[in-house]
Image 1: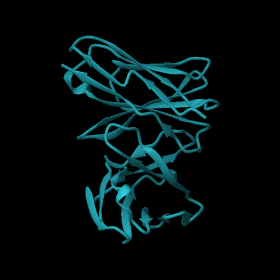
Image 2: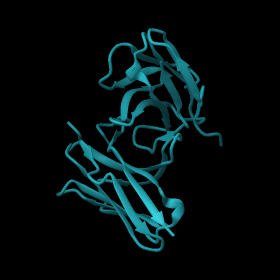
Image 3: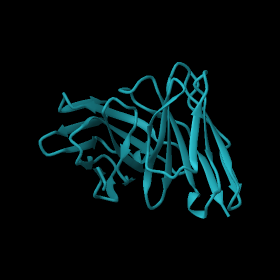
Image 4: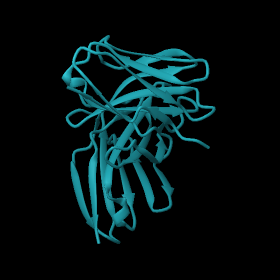
Length: 112
Length: 112
């Protein structure tokens, strides 16, 4: 039973355009959500997070939106750059533990 | 500030052997979690340690075990290795249960 789902395995975007990565979750106990970026053979790098008491969080080119009623969050990257090409993981946390439940990732390819 | 350090980076073992992986968290971080990444299953939670106590455990067989020392360094052990244990093993540390988790570069384990 996949509690965090990233339904798009891959996404291709042109440089300068917006990249939108989506994530759905099923567990109502999740109250903290994170996005990670990962290159092959490296550990995930933290990008941005959002608490369930907010519906938006911005950090530079990255914005995360949370729709609790739909159990949906999205990561917007504007403008997209070729260096953003990587696998992006959505993760969720709840119940007071550090345990993260990850989606299976979306591979983003930003072409020049 | 040093990041999360995992050793070794690469390891080749034979079926039936056992292996120990090491993780040194970011200084001051008390929570250490372990994850297994495989192409088919994505990132799956193994266990979490906080102040030398296992606080949470994922759905893995008893062949997978871990521990945390008083300096927060952690080890995980896999006994009676199987081919399916081949994966990237990632360690993450965080200050507390609500903070972002920072990952090491991982240990690539290959079982032959």
